Image (tube, rainbow, N blue to C red; front, top):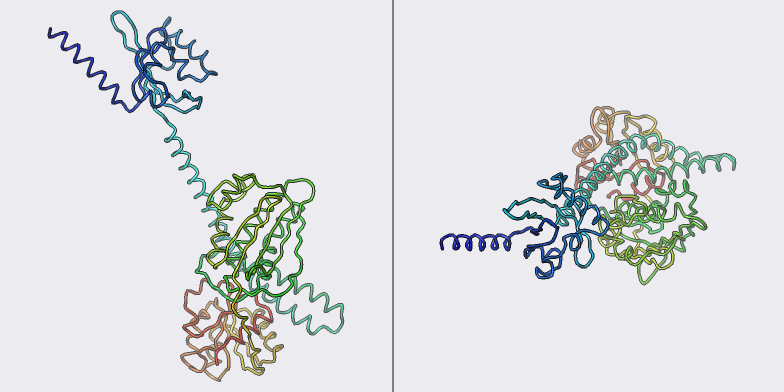
Length: 495
């Protein structure tokens, strides 16, 4: 009686262990037929225990393409004892009742009883584990991509900064040459140099803004100017693959209060997406870019001549890291950033993908245009720069605007000048070896309080000044600068 009770107790324990197991446990006989099928196996594969018992395992969980191989291996082990999987942990594919295939980790062990041999298979669903591993790998790939972008941005910022000073000279001198040319042909050539250098300046400023992380800086600007900068920034990519750009002249100014650089970068993301879509296509390949007044908003419209977007792709277009970039181009965050930027400015970015793709960015119109009066002529201006060519070019622009500049080469000479005589305005370059321009201007204001609000810091990298310039009464002049940039800067000076 004791033996019977022990056997009965042992059987109940085995049943309890099978019922509570977190893995699917399937027990088979020598013929491969199921003799035990626990609750987790029911849940994982969709068969009730009563349906699974006495059926060949291969009919229940082995995918059709693998059944012959499974049967051959099973027979070989039963007949010869040779096996490649008994007692090992392997990863294979299994199939559910509804036909879906899932990855599983499987371990098969053998139990030899006095009158029979049984095989217990433990199967664990790997779907979630593999999804987590794939997500981790995708995150690693994204972080690696972002690190590369960050490194590229740092390099780009450095190159742009080094180009600022010589470009400022070209821009200033070409402007003055065009104004003072004695014959039309010379004026025309100078104007071409000026236009090309002005375009380079816009691209450099965009590169610098992309390379530096900074708070949003809103200012009054024209929507058409923002669009032009975005087109300049991405022009080479379109030309290199033969995409034609159609950019009709704007019908009139559309003033908006936005961060010019951020919005231009956002539009550049959209342009890169459109370029990637149609770059390798056949037939007509065009991108149309224009501005309109629509429902009280400044609307910037970008459209291509490519095929329509699928509803699934359109629904995920603005998701962060969504795989929407054609042929895996980009990082998958460009369009997301573009929409976030539009919304941060009180606007929106929408896409119509029904016939070709059309993006429309809506930005609120500025309430009233900012009018800058031209500064009175005849200002005495001290220009301090350690690079004679750059300083001389700024002095030439000031002379052309009717002012009286005095050039000081380096910080020491600049300090000696403003300590010895009075000036209406002091303009200093930021990066100088003896003393940076910001410190010099603060000393000038201390020495001559009347200069408060009448000092200008010239720099190609305004985000690196690390100071609240407005609070210090100092204005920024961003390199490379044009005649109009200098005129506007002087017009904004206080008092």
